[in-house]
Length: 211
Ligand SMILES: [Mg+2]
Image (cartoon, rainbow, N blue to C red; front, side, top):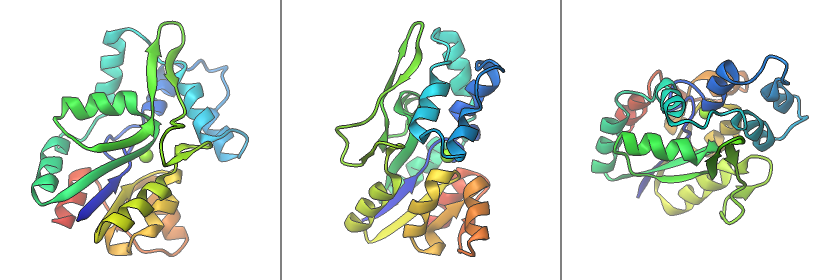
């Protein structure tokens, strides 16, 4: 079995859902939750939950947000090619599966998704929940991406990883460099550590490189 473990925000989409919320809905007076997380004062989960609490709850605004995350236009086709070539797609996210599921559905993509559950609640935004029943649960991020990747390595002969953010550093290092795909922060961090990786500009390039 061949398995591609992929991050979602900033990897399959161009923009992170939380970053769009920060730009459009989080008041300037609110703390910079991501900076608080990077400084170690807030867990990744709590930072995400803080952003998501500012999400609008009307359908039109939510639709606009989903569109503006800019899922790669070739996502559906690339995922279909991957599946046809016998690859399993496993999506890992420290974000929320509420928008991941909607975007996957819109693009006709079926994949295993490991992410934090959440629901839209009027007056409370997108309420993030800890995936306590998941075998990959980790309190600080919700889903331990390295644990998901280790599970893939135990199940599959060939495992690739694609990502872009800080929670992707550890899982990316578990796979061999030729199957380690990075852009953004992840690429910079791997370069800083002198670790090999393959840079991608768009998610379908990861698929092309693997097939
Ligand atoms: Mg990401």
